Image 1 (cartoon, protein in one colour):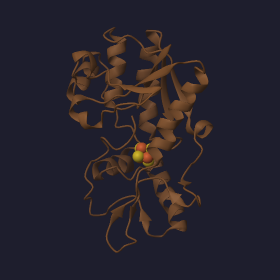
Image 2 (image 1 turned 90 degrees about the vertical axis):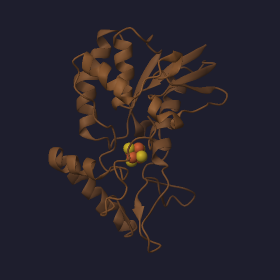
Image 3 (image 1 turned 60 degrees about the vertical axis):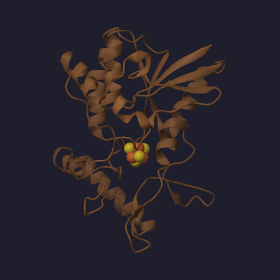
Length: 241
Ligand code: SF4
């Protein structure tokens, strides 16, 4: 028994998958999961609760909202000494601005999805993990190993949808445009996303600033925003969907 497990990332491509399921163009998965990193931007949940969740319920699909803290073994710090910051924060420790590696995406999202699925289906022979990756992000597609394989419903079966195709389908249903799902303090946000957070989601922005002050207590060289804005709007492709 191979289980079809959809990891709903909550953004445009995942909403494209939701729309395909809703319109009957894609057979529903056995299980649908959206991980709550417990630092997710409020707009992700607003969209999920108002649009994706109720629409999918109409066609009998329940999206499990899974708390990261229930399944992850680490939070902000990991490594042997438990002193490695797991988010891709900026650092100027070497005198030049650099970025730390991204471990959070794997620890807080993908491993959480896998542990949840293993718990739900202890006798499964394997899992096909659906990822919301569109044609324009083809370099992010993955090949699995053994028990865990990946599927990309937006491009599989000659669907070959790009991000614009997802938006077109979502809009054709009268659904609003989905947000870019992300943690409110994600250093991969570009200037436009930070500005949006500050203007439209001031509570999230305040939490992000408090978060930055907190991580700087351990390492004053790390920060969340490159003031030069050189990172651009780069959320796409940098986090597990
Ligand atoms: S959105 Fe950013 S901070 Fe959150 S898990 Fe992904 S890479 Fe990490």
